Image (tube, rainbow, N blue to C red):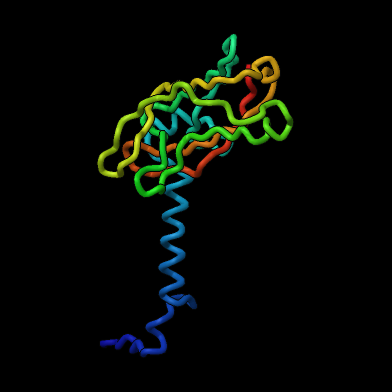
Length: 177
């Protein structure tokens, strides 16, 4: 006995389980994006979890260097990179220092002048300088005696070298030692 399957009409083609095919596609793409962002599958990622959400994070130390310098040591987890600049088309999120809270509190008159930053490696495909490993920044500040114990917000975005996945940008409040 041969059974015939029901004919799919034009009215039924646009829905699957009560969802339009467009909604289903958007849902599946979104799920894939969240899975890629939240569940890194690289063994380096699993070993280097350090952020509050379980994702890899940069480790940062801020130190007053007498007489008038402020040093930042930034350690980027193995198998990852961060950005030195935003690239030719301004579509990358570089490591940045937010001095505004210290200016608002009257501790600084203006953002300290950068006197040393890492060179980074040029990613010729994306026209952006990337940072790997341990990097240092040095700023000139005449308010060093007021900076100890204060916090500065530093924003960074890590990307996985192997998969190319970039994690959500993270802002860390770092206490200056």
